Length: 496
Ligand code: GLU
Image 1 (tube, rainbow, N blue to C red):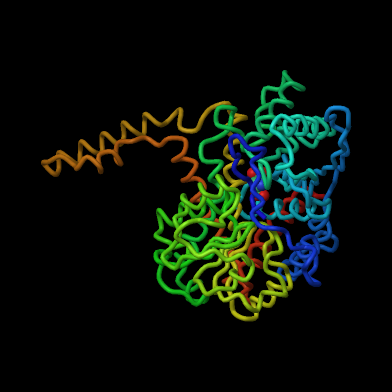
Image 2: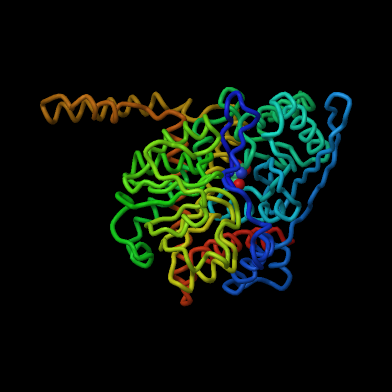
């Protein structure tokens, strides 16, 4: 399902939900649960690390899970809602991770996703522990005002128990939630703690006008773009994936056109010349060998609630089989467990870029690895959201927007460079270049630059583990090794 991760608020509709593709749990064969898969991965990565007895167990299990059940009145009846917030690791505080609203949320899923947050943050050097929340409901079943009441009540419950706090636990959007829910949550917190000067930092992914940061909404999708760009800078990895050249001209199958899928696809098609030949959505798939117009499909999807009937492309109802079509890059940006032991052997893409959380089960992962596929793992590739959440949190606790102090200095410096250049050349530099040299960075420029740098750095850290280790682990194992080593180091230094 929409991995993000955070989803787009659709003005005038009930929620920022975008349950891109149905969860197939019921019809799926024996593959283990996401939590079991994460545990398996931790055990596997432990084999590459020198952890003291017991430490990998501490790194594995959630530290705390709070389950809450609360009533909300609808006319003369009460409806009962169940939600969770899991805290996976508090080796760094606050802990961080989204809150999802979905009918299929379970405690186990929330725990698994909290663990992924721990490793995601560690891998991309975001100094937070991991957490995740979930509320069992389908936001599409509720009017906006009802959803607001439910969200506020859920927030109140979590705040009361310390599961939302600027210094302890900071949620963000995820599947079925968006900026709108984050603004409600921030408001509840502020009302409860009017004297807390850092109240706004209790949640990230807020609207920019409510203490949010430019570029947070696109962040996970942008991170996918920056991660793929970095992958294509490593010729060895590219040829190992059976590909050559750069991103330009690569043919992509995208599953899920929610917030992550949309922003990734827009950036990749418009800026990297990638061609999205298939989009798989909840009601089926669109196919066009010439490449789909992402914005047009997205607008159509928002308008009609599906992709069926989109003009100029072939529609196929059985979206799942379309994942098996030939392409260069398969980007699952929807639900977890989309590639299982049932369909893994039929996947033809040689590079799979996990924009969703846990789209490939551990069994499927093994099948794919054995058949020589390359997987860019979720904890790396979809970390852009939490990276920019970190920037937002910093902005909130410093109470100042990025660039406020130095933007004019940068501009003055640019002007001086331009003057010198023009004097030396004896002629004026073309207008378009002048703009580039003179302009000081805006918040969005700084956010994108910080995200880009973070994604490059994290990839290189994964690479260094792969090359330093005679056993050359795959990228997912390398990502876990890097992340777990950092978590373990913190525990060792703390003396826990
Ligand atoms: N929900 C996003 C994720 O799963 C972002 C979490 C955050 O920003 O805290 O990565």
